[in-house]
Every structure is written in C-alpha cells, then in structure tokens.
Length: 426
Image (cartoon, rainbow, N blue to C red; front, side, top):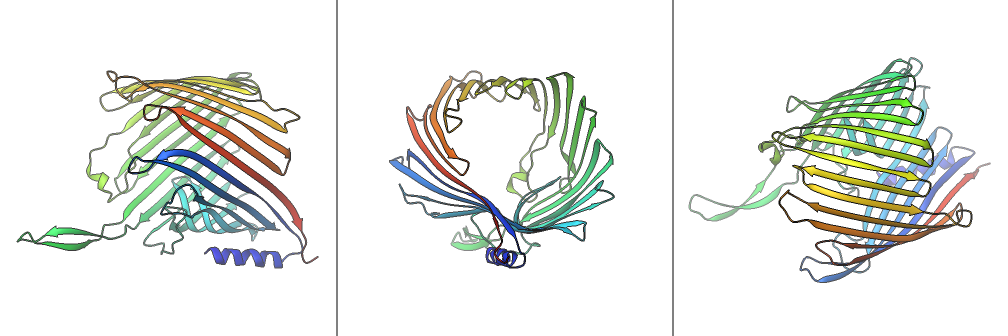
C-alpha cells in the first residue's frame, strides 16, 4: 500500500501546474539507565526520526506521518522499528459533494474509531445540514506492521450520519463492526494414555459491533448540552451513556456537570468475556474561571460508584501567564492519592530561548490500611528557536519512587519546519 501511495504522490506532482508542500522533520534522543529481564543494569539510548509531510495540488492532497526508531545502547529484537500512523491520498469536492481518502488513516466517526488501512468517504447534503461518513479497511494493531488482510477476516467498517435540524444543534447515528483474527498457535496435550502430542489451536475472532446515538445543542452562549449512548449488539446491552453540560453563569465563570455510565468493553469471543464484570457510574461537577487567555482557574469533584463501594476524586489548579499548578486527591475504593504538580516556562530574548522547569510530588497507597509510598520528579530544560523553521529542545528528568532511589533521564530534540510552493511544470 505504501508504494502505491508514494506513486500517487508522484502523479500528483505531474498533473498540476502548482503544488504546495509543508511538513516537519524531527530528530530526538532519549537516554536513561534501566534494567533488563535479568535485573542487570542496562544503558538505553533511543533515537527517533519523525517525518510529517503534506503535499497538495488543488483538491488532491497527500499526507504522511511516520517514525523510525532504534536503540543504540542495547540490542532489541524489534529494532529498527518503523511506525506509520498516516499515509493517505485525499480527494476533495468530488462532484461537489464528496471527499475520499485512501490509505492508512485514523477513523473517528461516532461509535467507530481506530487506525485502518482502507478508505473513508464523506458526503454533505441539504446545504451541509446532513453529513454522511462511510469507512472500511483492515485493522492496524501495531503501526509498525504492514499487513495485507481482507476486510472480511480482520477489518473494521461502519458509518455515521449527522443531521443538524437547527443552527445550534445536531443529532448523529453511527455503526461500527470490528473483527480481529487471532493467529493460530501450538500447544501440548495428553491423549487417553497420557502421551503428549501437539495440536494447533485456532481461536475464534475477536468481534465488536456497536451502534451509537449522540446529540449536541447550544442555547446561545449560555448553556451547552452533549449526550451520547453506545449499544453493544453482541452483548445486547447499553455499554456507555455519557451526558455533559456547561453553563456560563457570568463573564469568565462557568459550571460543568458530567455523568458517565460504563460497562467494561470486552470483545465478543474474548477469554475475558467468561468473567463476571460490573458497570460503573461517575458524576463530576466543576467550576472554571477564565479572566483572560493567560489566567485560568478550575476546580472539579467526582464520585465514582461501583457495585458495593465508591471512590472520590478532587482536582484544583490553574495557569497564570508562564506558570501552571495543580493539586489532585483521590480517596475511597480506588486507592488514596495526594499529588501536586508545578510547571513553568519563561520566554527570553523575544522567545528565542525559553527555559522550562517542572516539579511533581505524590503520596499514594492502594488501600486504606496499606503503607504510603511517595514519588518525586523534577524536570529542567530549555527550548531554543532562532527562527520559525528551526528549534532545539533539551530536558533533564529525575525521579525517585519505591523502585528507584534515583532515576535520571535526558531528552534532546531537533525540529525543522518547511513550507514551499512548487511549480515544477510552469
């Protein structure tokens, strides 16, 4: 598929008088000392090269986002590792109604979301009040895997219809069908005389089939409502209900309220489907105050209900110009935690150099009667950007936790942006 799309990019450049190309190249290094499977000390120095490219000509565009990485401090079986998260050709305004994209792409359409190698089309009708999205392709479980499999055996397909009956509201209906083939494996079994023999185990595919409805409405600029419900077709039950509202009480001050009902999302035919599972319900309320783009405060409190217990979550914090701070407290059935975090970034020399620093502290325990454990982390670095095309980042990270008395890490990144208009055939 990748060769086909690269060939399409060449054709793109040959069929128009003017083209534009933009993107970025990012080279980064991450080094730290860890331990291998035998608990022996091991130095890791991992290098990453990320390429983001977008080329367009008229209504035709090509997009690629890929990363290759390799560890130069140790030998890993998967190195060098190539991950491709986007590689597609997109054609817009086909017949004045449709957009079509073919290749590796991320799907986000109501009940359906995930990475596929396939196609997606979007259509709009009735002055854009009705939009239809259809998609289908093979699943990409690990983006470094470039596999060719039929959609019927290991694929995801579905669609979404969104209707906007009024200017400030919309209703969406969506459907998703996902199927994942599992590779056969061998196992040793005993016959009636207890003699061992080898069999090939062919597992049934993992299957997910969801239908979803969502709605959104805004009353002027005062109240915003959102709601969504997912129905699991295989298990014949509602798997998720979510409702959210935001109320603007006065200038700069807003209140939020959210409710979530969840059933554990377990694929049909999965081994985990034989275990008993229970749903959870969560309700969270909050206040937000935004005095200006540089001054923001928030406070949120949530209660999570389990079958026979509950837990709570509290978070407060804010940002002011170049400083941000937050405090988090969890207590109840899910464990206890008290944590604080601080981050600062102060630009100098007309934003050419921006020093950064961060601090975090947390005390936690898994159960009420367990002893407390602490985690402390520090970070310090700087961003150097002499022009809009080039930047360099350096950061040192240190952490102390129950497993490591002193964990020091270093991160370095170089980025180059480009944006050009080409006219090869002019």
